[in-house]
Image (cartoon, rainbow, N blue to C red; front, side, top):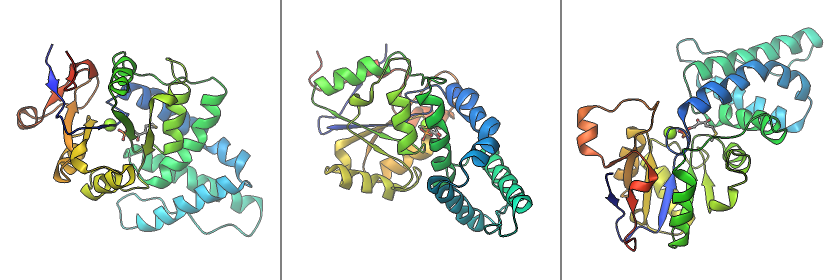
Length: 261
Ligand SMILES: CSCCC(=O)C(=O)COP(=O)(O)O
Ligand SMILES: [Mg+2]
């Protein structure tokens, strides 16, 4: 087994979810199809609710920003003329969500609606989140050694809490000291990592970020965050240069804390 020593200055381990703690297949084959299959009915059922209206407003704002993009799906202003307009509006939101998902976009607007939709599926017990088997034992060990463990995922904080709260390992939310999503900034922007350090109350070089995406690793590194790229079954392949440049791990058990024997 390969061992990667965690630098002594690291006090915080920051974890990506999809492709790092959790198989991409769980997200792509279970969570995302749930949205595509249920979004129309969800909007029809919850349309009058404040939360749903806020989600639609955010999606509409995003659609305006996206209007220059190829294939972008506009969302018209709120309907005034009854049921037919409402159905057209709902269909536009459905089409917009499906278009964004076809590109695996990580917009806050899309992620917020997804999080709200998954709430019903998780709390009713229809879905349980999957974690790689090394994740929970390693996180427990790190915390026992005094490390803080935070999550930084494009999935909304609400969705992150659902994953950790309703998992095949039970409710493991207590293993996480805090959560960050794209509201703090996108994962490919270094400024987001600086803001995360600031919010935790540490320096960027006190953080070790584990992610499967080299663009995210590169942004974090530019902010002076330590990084390791996580190689899991089903993840996108890395180029030879990326394999040479980054520290790679295939399991969290390959990380050694300075105090580990
Ligand atoms: C945490 S909710 C489900 C995953 C998701 O929607 C997503 O976009 C995952 O992105 P990540 O940044 O964790 O790779
Ligand atoms: Mg990921």
